[in-house]
Image 1 (cartoon, rainbow, N blue to C red):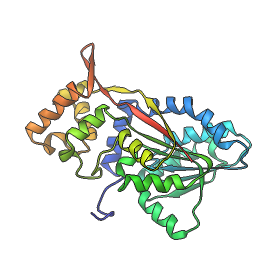
Image 2: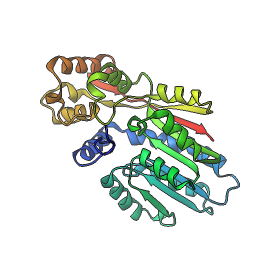
Image 3: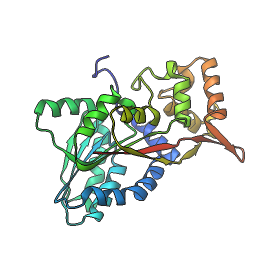
Length: 290
């Protein structure tokens, strides 16, 4: 399939769907707790003795997490200049990121380079230039599902790390609710932007095969999907749309497939507490060493 024809980033209605999911799931809050617990120590190791620090965000979306990480890096090394390169395929999300930077006072000293393209195109562009910029810290948060070739993507971005650098990958954990749903219904779900579902299991297998040193931290998170079992609930329908990457969950699958998915969501992907159903949306934060 031609890269141009394949939607690998959020535009239009999918932006609203993604924003709705973030509000409902608490995912960014969970990732931020992990970031604030792990990154201060990592940043000290990464930046020790360096006169400048270069950061690359791949698939950064609207930049809410980037802004927090860059602020954290600045507060760790207030006297060291920082640069930020951002690779994001969605022009709509990039515009939102730029607006966020504009109103974040602490980031005004950081020069940003915006690369509005998917990660494969950035890789091609860098290789064509020959003189590739290297980075102290590279992060890929919830984006490796969209990479054409997982092994090549990890290999390329790892090759951009400077001495003592770190590549941080955040991805859904093996055997989480997402992993269970998307692998059980692979035939029905892996048909559009995500053609091959990956969890931390695939990423870690890839790191091991490349002989890369890494450490994994589990980010515990659940969110309430009780409304998904009420067909007349707008919230439930919108969540199901996002979780199955469809515009219309109820029109997209046969009644048998829908019933099977809902049964799986309730009984294999979630836990029940006080009559509410909580989806297991655990994430893995994987730090890969240069």
